[in-house]
Length: 287
Length: 312
Image 1 (cartoon, rainbow over the protein chains, first blue to last red):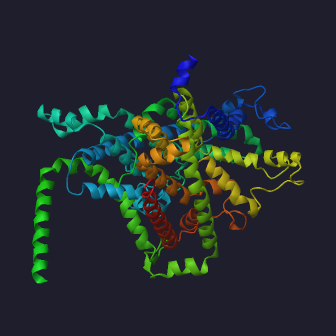
Image 2 (cartoon, rainbow over the protein chains, first blue to last red; image 1 turned 45 degrees about the vertical axis):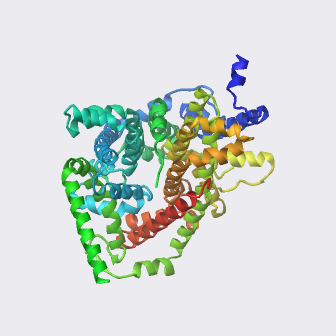
Image 3 (cartoon, rainbow over the protein chains, first blue to last red; image 1 turned 90 degrees about the vertical axis):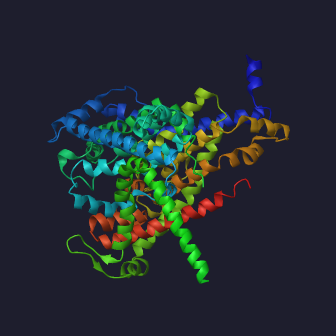
């Protein structure tokens, strides 16, 4: 066994260096994870422990009281918790699904066909990744206003379709598909749509997951405070942050809110990590 | 000269014809690209153009925009002291957390790469989680609470480094450094993932050839083999880092308040938010957006030409 491990080691590594490395990584990992661990523990603490002095980092008697309190508070509010949850889930689901389909269609032709305007368009998309959404926030508001979409779900969903990051990753990944696969299907008489839906899409499933996690991350955390102002259409994150702002009496619930908000993207990532890494391997920006 | 020009024109015409024929042949492609292209133009390209246009106008949504030339830019640079604070803070944050976060992302991706497979996947989750953990960063306001019950205050007082509690998030002296710490904590984002994936894809036979050629330790291996074959990922990571470090606003607004004491934690984006959504001076806000846009694009171009030199 130990011989096997020794054999696997790269010959130009010192054992002392490896041990130092492990210890160092462990320390940094602890620092990175600490705020999240703390947040989860705070959410599990019963009220008397939250205000204990000196404070303990780990919950002594973990309970789910804070979560149930949160649901009670939200249940009593004018707009119910389920409505907020529905809003966010609806926006996240529609935005992600549409983005996946539209961006994949665009990425497919950009990656696999040569047509005039192909390179230029892709270049513009890469430039669009170079600035934050804040740059376009105000004209976007004016455009959505003209379209009459302000204060509807569409004001968040439709712009999410066009996210440049998704198209970029999808195109880079699709370039790795063998062209012979597509040509073989064409000889069999399949048209472009059939090639796309029957052959290309099933073969790029890792890239799906990546698009999904980036899109969900953006939409799930979207407060949308500037586009939506009717209470019954507000997103979960926005409503939860209102609770967080509720001061000292809401400390426990505020901690529960943090956990509710962060857990979804993290869980999706945990389950799709290997697929996401497979996609990111082709994420490089060549010029 | 004239002849040359004529030749050029016929060539152009010919090229256009060829392109047009090709385009006709590939009608399908345009159909596929159309939905994305239309939305992308509507929500990414057009807004940038519109933002530049509005930056030359006075526009408050109620009245139609009135052209005022460079007035917005002149007042921004010459009269608006708070904007200059914002520029200074944004540049400080970008210049410190940008490169540092970028290097740390690569360094940890590279160190993690040495680990056995299952430990590696846990490590990736631990490092990546902060950047997708929603607004988990507000937990730092508990750590840095201003009274003696705050963890950092209590810790430093127990050690005897300070004797009275510090108002970490209210005192302008400490605001920016604390925001930087939090931003660094969140900096292992998609660039980091790209590095991890890229490192796994480096050709193994290159390392073996490296041992033969006498590469002695991991540092030499890094510089001569790993970095050059990671160039495209390094570019991607740089783009992601620049985009996020110039767009800092959420963290500073959540931790230091909005507006913060003496505007000490104001960034360009916070200023834009202030004028766009609180004062509805859209023309002025668009001028801020345009300046931010130019800064980001120029910075990207500079970094890209720098990265092209890695390993050469």
